[in-house]
Image (cartoon, rainbow, N blue to C red):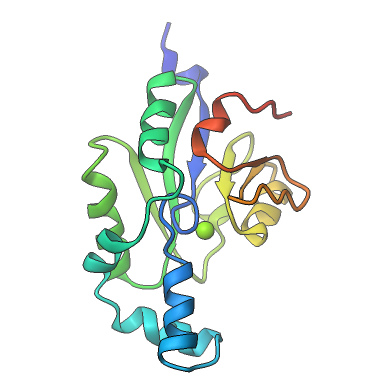
Length: 172
Ligand SMILES: [Mg+2]
């Protein structure tokens, strides 16, 4: 029997789930640069960013790398990383970052302007994401949304604060 066909598809978001790439940029733009948080100022920040160094410097959230290893070893899920990107350079550096730890995981960069639901097939698949907008689109397209929140704020979705909790979460 081929185990692979029995495994559920599991898509894991990157920003705010694997790495905390959220807190520092917002603080930097607001406090250090003294600028308003809006898409133009954030966009300019990300355009100028040294993504390689940035990813190395940002904190891993709640042992996420080891948690992903645990999820892979459980053989319960076919795991992919599904991450929005603003540029090819960002995609390149995120792929290099994840490849340091995982040789054969799938990594799917999604252009920021495209819904994650247009890049892969959500039906019957799980998406772990910290952003409710993505979860809403995902569930509306027939997928199963699981919110990642370090404060366990569910916003109406099953919620986890550590990735390995997906192994014991009961979801419909
Ligand atoms: Mg995110």
